[in-house]
Image 1: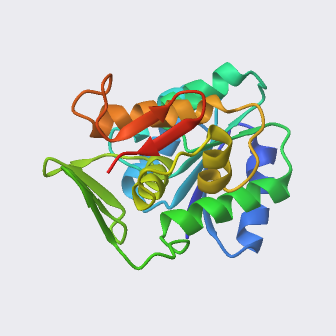
Image 2: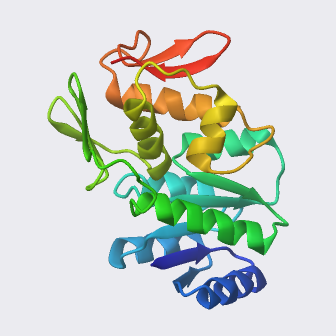
Amino acid sequence: MRILVVDDEKIIVKGVKFNLENEGYEVETAYDGEEALQIVRNVKIDLIILDLMMPRLDGLETCRRIREFSTVPIIMLTAKGDDTDKILGFEYGADDYLTKPFNILELKSRVRAILRRSSGLGAKDKNTRLITGDIIVDTDARSVTVHGEEAQLTAKEFDLIEMLMRNPGRVYSRENLLNIVWGYEYPGDIRTVDVHIRRLREKLEDNPADPNYIMTKWGVGYYFKA
């Protein structure tokens, strides 16, 4: 697995690179958004660790541009603790978020969890094609088609819709979804789920404002309607 680490603070890049290489990953590095975009366009990258505050091109704009041509998982890093920055990151297509200073063990844990899910190693169900109406999920190819056209989902969006479709009618609270899909406690960031649900509706529903499949159980959570 090849990971791209993007941060203008060279000491952080050096430390993260050292720790990830000790875990057996190949690591590419970049120190600004423009350099990162160049690498992603020319090298097969399995995951990106992307700083929010950078010169030339900040992390949010870099994330947005990457999402124009790639669904590679992205973990955003920021020195800010404001929830607004986290929600913005998810709006632009980030899959996960860590606030500086972060524990390197936590970073490695999140990297392992995301790569395991994005490579399909976490799937236990042998049914590799899930079909409801015009939505088809292919878990082997990690692709989703709607009306015959492929929807461009991020890694977490794919994990979320796969989990919901495997359990139609079952209502999940936001906390449940965070723990199941993200794989760890995510206190204070419940809106993360709302952002991902809204983005899924925009990509998969004919009318996101009046969805047919990804439903809300008011006061409880979300479920998939078969």
